[in-house]
Image (cartoon, rainbow, N blue to C red; front, side):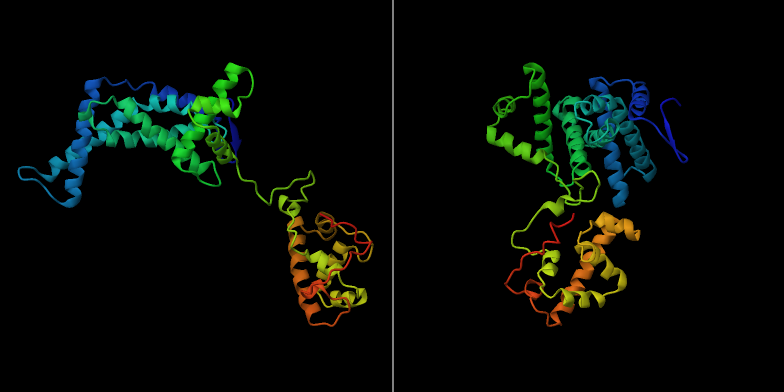
Length: 334
């Protein structure tokens, strides 16, 4: 098939092709008129009641289990017919949502769940048009799917709906004004105050991972750049020792590889501290693995230092004094 990609034994079909094939299929289902909607709704209601009686083991006088089973089956057929006749309504609603979080075909699938729920809950006695009633359920289902699938932090459905209105207002105003709309202009379009628009914009922001890298080499994570002014880094604790010979003796008590990695990290042999990536290349380890070994080795080194009387041992074991970093250490290597 043209435009498909093969991955192993699985054929991946572009979303556009899937939607096109889906539209071709649902387009064959004829639409319903008002009387047909009522007739199908009655059959569905009767089928649901028959299912309930069968589940409870209650067979009314003058009826049989076979008759109840037939009513239940007829209700299922009516529900299928009702749903199939309204699948195009789901597509028309799903197309109004942005596809940057979920592909259109997934939005349609979420909306179909809402449609099926609407068919079950529809009360023909109230005289409502089914499409008007179903639209609410379809939007609820799509909004819930977006909030559950697209976000790390789930937002209430009503918030997702407000964000959808905000996106539509932004697109419409951008077309009309030929520029990005201001906060006040968005507030006017939404019938809300500017503070509420600010709140919506804050909700729309996606959270950033502290593990995300911020440099081209992929060596520095965002978390590495966030500094706690009250915290003392492990490197600073080690470099606060005045007794370098004593520090060397402590390093000798560590396993050979851990000692070598710490020496390279602090530039104790060459005078030039190495980054995690540089150390990893030397020893055939990943960036994260070197970081783990370094953190573990520093904890062991602090424990050893607490058991040893080293001159100048201040921040390493929790003292209040601070010592300047040696000139050879320079800045901390990322």
